[in-house]
Image 1 (cartoon, helix red, strand yellow):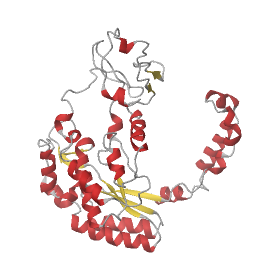
Image 2 (cartoon, rainbow, N blue to C red):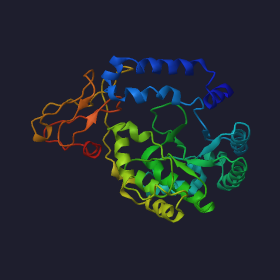
Image 3 (cartoon, one colour):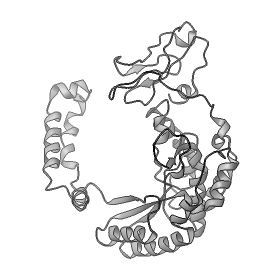
Length: 357
């Protein structure tokens, strides 16, 4: 681990760094490569690119604390990164900071009462009082070292494994149901530090919530679960369009008042309610190969509707990228978690096709 961190901080002596830079140099001298990617006119400016890639690749670290990690170990690791490595540090905290009663209440309000929780698992996690004291000490240390320090909110929520799909007693909740929990943790911490604690966000962000999150001054915002849904990485394009109109680009702190409103709204907004998403599951009945496994879950027997004129449909083993040539003009490029399928000419076009252009 020490070697990995050191090499990320300074890769000047790493043989792989030199190898990759040489490979890039050769590609930029390759006429066929440049032509294939439409880069001929940029040849001159691209020649300087390899030399501009810094050997110091990272200046910061985000630490993901496992469920049940002792508080003193969390602080010790953060201190080490600040004092010994001189890295700007963010520490990822858990939704259990809200306490068992509040987490249970929020899940019930949003219609997720069937999600089982173990109260004892909250006992093993970092408590809010401990977190506030720890964060205050680490913020002071970072200031002393002229480094940045903040939190990433939040990790997944440990729940009772009552589905039997996977072994073990626990499973971990992410995505839409996590949003009202994570944003309320953010509000609690921001109130405690008057908006001066930098926050990175990762709890259930999507194109439907990212603008509201960003407008509070929280950044960066990362997402994973949402990209596993139909539309895949194209959802990032929709997120960027949502952010383009934000008036919060210049914010250098968290707007506590706006965040408090969002945290309250998160408990009742339609998106966070269980009934918002239909119960039907999208599944493929047959076995899929380990690689090249993107496939339409339903074949398309009819495409006579005018919606589907001049349409190319992407199925397994077809050439990529495939362009959706209807009025939405969406381009689907691999790797995509799910490729859309329409069951008949009268089927409504899925919402994500019209949203993610």
